[in-house]
Length: 286
Image (cartoon, rainbow, N blue to C red; front, side, top):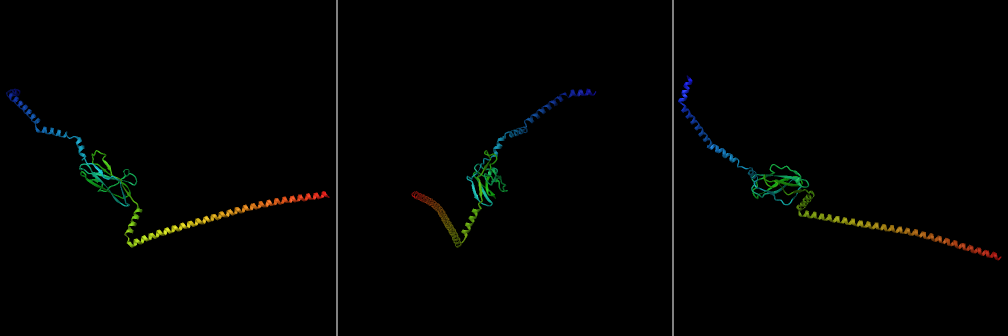
């Protein structure tokens, strides 16, 4: 019974159902077309294109501000000091204006090249190079407490095409206490009144004359000693010569005496022979 009524109902409203289905399909098509052509889709599309047009190379180029730092010192510095001494060098920006700050360090070596020495600790207000404009200069300072060799090391702004670091000239601190004492003594003499200064000069002159006289006396004493030594040597030579002559004379006398003795003996032998011959002849006569 019920199925018959439902079949009757479908047959009666069949055209209306088809019309509703067509209307729903058309509405769906219109809605889909509206979504595809709406500004929201175009907005997302534009954003994607904007994000893809930023290359990485442009960020690297922007890091370097085209500045270029350089130290102005051409020759090494020599400073004479025995206590803490403030050393300084000059740095110049030869490129475009700096957009960021840079840094610097100080190296020390008692002897030799400071590059191979130790890195010193800087104060809180040191170690930074401010933003320099084109052609602007700045003075870097450091309080050196010990004698030796010092060097400043500065860094270029990040992105600089060079080495990125640069060294200043060498600053040598020499401590010569002896020379300083002499200079202080000279200053004291200059500060004395004219009379005291003249008196000190006279005293110095007297001391010089006294030293000269002492040297002269020593030279004379040395000459006298040399003369006495020479005379003693001559006397000794003379005595040795006399001794040699005496010994030679004794030898000559001994030889003469020996000769006289032999001659006397010969004469005596001759006399004896003559007497014997005489006696013999007289005996023959008898």
